[in-house]
Image 1 (tube, rainbow, N blue to C red):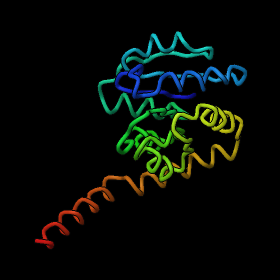
Image 2: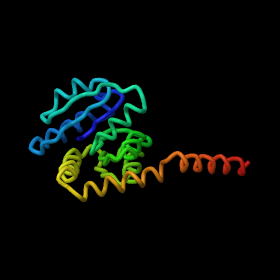
Image 3: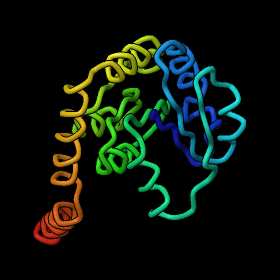
Image 4: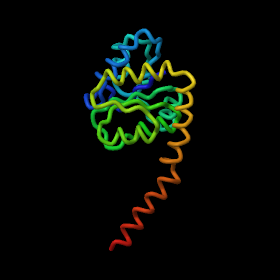
Length: 173
């Protein structure tokens, strides 16, 4: 299952055209695509692969369930400052594949995902194809991804990093 999700899936900054092109290039791979966000039903109709839409999800629990259902989270945003969705998907066990797109590339790398050069649809398609046919190596990468992302972006680590920043700020005055 390849998941593509965004608040508004067809917003030009979320890179739907690039995701669609990469996925449609996999028509012989027998993939299933799950789409989440507004306009996801319309987007599903544009795919050659089997696809369905869960629409816009309103709760963290719903989003976590969708992330957990995914083998791959494809994020083809053109602009992201951090890539929270990438970190969330990785924490739920999905392999993240996406563009460099500002801070997104750094987050994906930290999650042991695969980063393509901005707007390089061919490279995204190659990553998807390799991951789909990767077998045991793919499953190992997902397991490593899950435990590392929880250690790096988990609540305890995040809280400690915030406290460090606050402490540094207080001590610098």
